[in-house]
Length: 273
Image 1 (cartoon, helix red, strand yellow):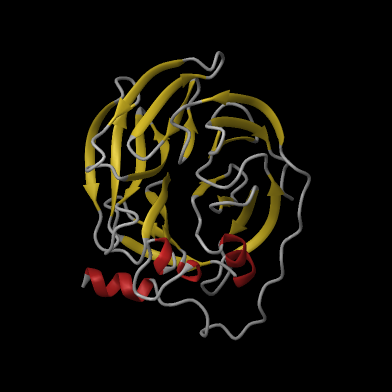
Image 2: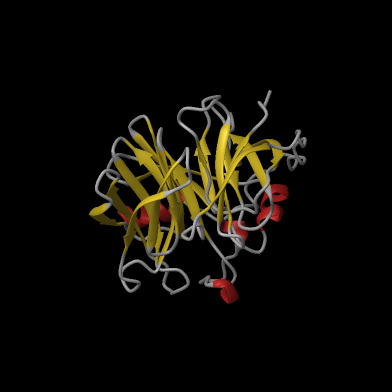
């Protein structure tokens, strides 16, 4: 029953909606850099709390002081157990991290939990088979929101899927699927050939997502009807794709990484109206 529900939720995009395709969203003023720090672990993403930022790699997490950029703690896991940890969010005193077996197939995903105070691994939740590879997850109220990426076969994909199968899913407290949405084709083209690597809900009620490569942040919202997300705006950002997070203290401040330079960057994002 669970697998059947997942397959129904993740029906292939396109071919079902007779409405005109959405247009590309307006491009806003670029985000302005407010801080930039070197971080050895800045390969997949970054997350921040009030005092620290956490740079994330496949099997590494570095904890850094936000004021000085000094690393104060580090966690390192076995690469066999943590082959691809893509992103994390702060949930109370926990780091909740999206992980997968990328680029292995069949695709499998897990949620890994760490204590931010001790930087110790606390719990692993292996997810049921989903139609893709988990790239980010975030709690909003009593629900989890998760992105499942799909890639062409030469980038670790399977089953004839590609970036067009990227799917946003709403999950319950036990990580069971409730609803799902796909992206409009014009936005999917910005992800190609990869998928959405980062995402976080803004305080303005919009969902902000990034791709894998382009230095762009996309604001989207749930549709009034149907299954296609509404693309609201694009904001140029100073880094290339990967996982991002909003600062919990500084308004409209987004943390992202520059993967090639191994840097974390904080930038002020203009309001979307």
